[in-house]
Length: 331
Length: 234
Image (cartoon, rainbow over all chains, first blue to last red; front, side, top):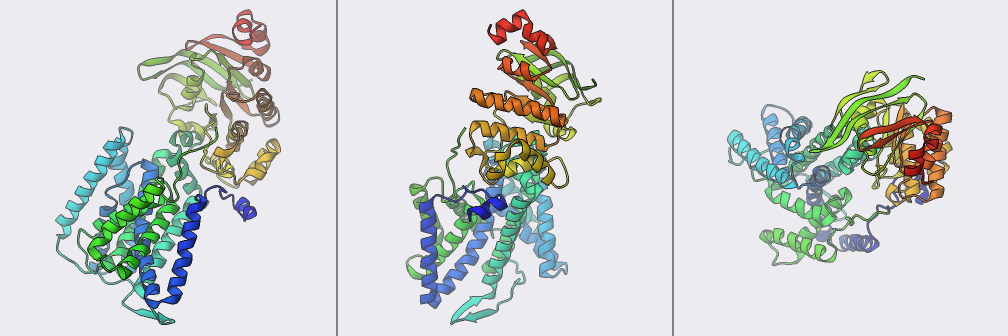
């Protein structure tokens, strides 16, 4: 293992602290045993994973921007929601679902870059609070634009995966859950590979971690930060498009609850940690689904308070989140 | 000897505070030039002016052409600036730091890494280690190695001896000298430790409150009365 890590030049010290690892492994064992014991448990776990993947990818978008710009992008959910409307419009114009999906991601990338260049960059060096206010303004602006163009009425989109259900060993898996899981995890993995193995990814990480030192080695920092916003927008668009089918309808408030779950997931994982965001999202998705199934007073209205209760509990025990660590380094 | 870097009447300021009041200096191709002076004399600012990380006036010519644009522009022209505090990416691995050194170049890094390894053999075993967990001396060497990966025409070194044990300081300067002799690396070195800097450098400039107070070949400066008293301590 150590040998492999050295060959790949992967960092050896980035695993989270061991108690966290033990808890995570324990939960995995618990889930596996549960799934083998009960079909309902297995179904709920898979459905939870699918929801959690959506939370996780939006949380990852938040983390990307947090690392590059050091603020929570409050407009992340609305950017995702607008992307879903763009896909909706493309489908109305006669594109097939997956054509629209691809075009939407490209448009989201360009729009993400445009937002960074046009409204974030001018205030970035002023103060953190200025950037936060700009993202809140973006939230209102995008919400307004979507309402103006498409109106607040409910709309319907074709389902990307259809309504089929697979049966395996007495457990029913919705094709939609599996599809959501595959698409979100694939996009997260692609993004990870981009950051880990490409020069662009290396430059982006350097620009986010230490802008001054990065520019001294020739990284065009501003360009990298803009690309970071573009990628976050793409990830948000994936999350939005995958979230839409489970809500059954498309309306401008689509992403507002999901942004809150994603925020909880990001903090749960430790705002600075991309892996933490994904794990946090998956854990939150599964936890909420299982609680909803087995604890009867937790109705769907109580899901959000429960998500925050979990968040609060974790932060009391480990304030830096699951994968976060205080900045300690040898000098 | 052809001049690689020429500064002519360069001024720089931090907000309202003026740090350089017209510095002129020349670094010849293949030379090691030392920049000496007390704290606050403007040594670091001179390097920052060259790499474009501080606002400045005056002309700076590099390899015959005017040098302007930001820090990444200077890096693309072939200037590797190892700043005070080394500028290593503590959160990244040793290998990633070296890859970042070669950021402005295209093509494979294998040959470069092989050459870097011949000067810093220990880097091989530490490729996957997080740079922040290296010792101070190792980090300084990593910063040098990273600068070298850039295949720079000019290296700006800011206080490579800072916070290091005397033995390590000697080691660092030995490697700088070796890179200069064997690879033809040109370097402008800011240093508090005038003694060791004058030994490595062929010529030197002494800055006092943002101006060049003295300059000349190292042997002359070593013999110079006021340099000896102020910077060499005998």
